[in-house]
Length: 234
Image (cartoon, rainbow, N blue to C red):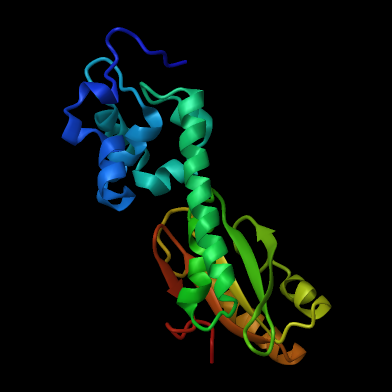
C-alpha cells in the first residue's frame, strides 16, 4: 500500500498556479492535461516525483487512458506509487466518464449513422481485454430497442452461431440490427474472419427480413464501419 511519507510530494508542494485542483476550479477541467487530472485523484506523489509527474508516468507505463481502462487493479498496483485505493479511484473515474458518454448517446435515441452507434459503445468496448460481439436492436425509425451481448471470444465464423445474433431481434420485433465488436489490440482494421462473418449475417438477415445496417469494429479511440468500407455488404 502506498503511504504518505516525509519524502512524498503533495499537490500543495507545487506553486499555486501549477496546482491542478486550483487550476480546475479557475479554468475548468478541460484546461487540464490528463496527467493533471490524474494528479487530483492521486493527491500525493512519491519520493522524487510530484503527483503530476506520477500521473504522467502511470499514463506512459500503461499506454494512456485506454491502457488504464484495460488494466486490472493488480496490474495498476505494480506501478511504483500506485496502491489499491488510488487504482480503484482512477478506475471509478474512468467508468463514470464511460457511463456519461453512454447516457448522452442513449438520450439522442436514434442511431442514424456509424458515429451514433460508436458514441454509444466506444468507451466501454475499447477497454475490453477480449473480443465481444454486441447487437444493437433498432425499430423502423432507427430507435434503439436494446443492446445484446451475444458472443465473447475470437470471432470465427465456425464458432459464432449466426442464428443466435437474431434471437433477440426476433423476440423484440426489431426491424434492423447493427453489429459491433472490438479488437483488443486497439487496431480496428477488419480481419478476413470479420468480413466472412459479416457476409453470413447480412445474408441471414435478408432471409429473416431483418436488415443488418452495419458492422462496427472498435479499436482504441477509433472504429471502422464495415458498410462504409464495403466489406461484407453487397
